[in-house]
Image 1 (cartoon, one colour):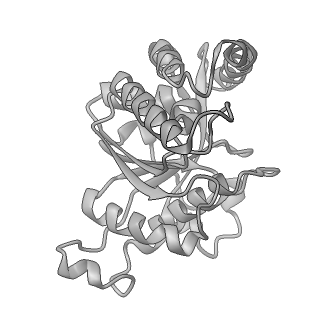
Image 2: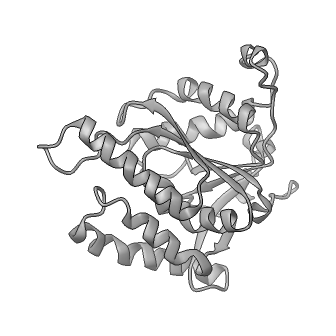
Image 3: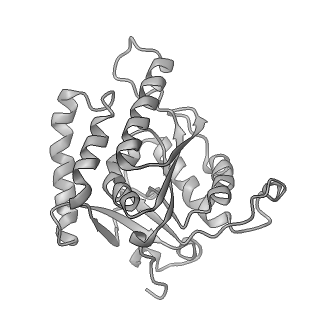
Length: 247
């Protein structure tokens, strides 16, 4: 590949774009904790409040949203997240990327992250529209945030164009970066356990072995017991680059 990918371990100012509470912990919790321990500032952009992710028909959306917000705050504290920004889009009805990317472009210009972490919008068979649209909005925002003619009204608010150094996409079928999370594995697990509404006992007992097995599979790529995997790219890889899949 002609353009090298950046080192996520060198990130010091990180924006994590998560479709729902728990997505960041599930896919990148160990890496987020590791970066925070290394002194990076971590900010979450939570696209929805997860209000329709309840498992009981007798609980209202408002109650689910309140529960999941509290769970996310607790999980973020464990991982060392500095702040959580709630974008307020409706769970299960996140609009098309061109709508979601607007607040993300402004947020990137405000926070000026060197790295953005999100999900891989090109994951095959992903049926959840929030995952597809929110993550595509994230990569589009990374690409466009550096262009002064895009959302020029940001300038009046003191938000200058900003070029991110790298984008790390979790849940990728073609990862190129494997992060050793042995030292932060327990933090990842404890943060995930905060999401009790999503992982009650019987579901946790089913999912934890899968989470562990996948982390161990990635670990073999990192010469570690456990690891997380990402497709790490620059914004240059995201536009008219036919070799990006090889990166």
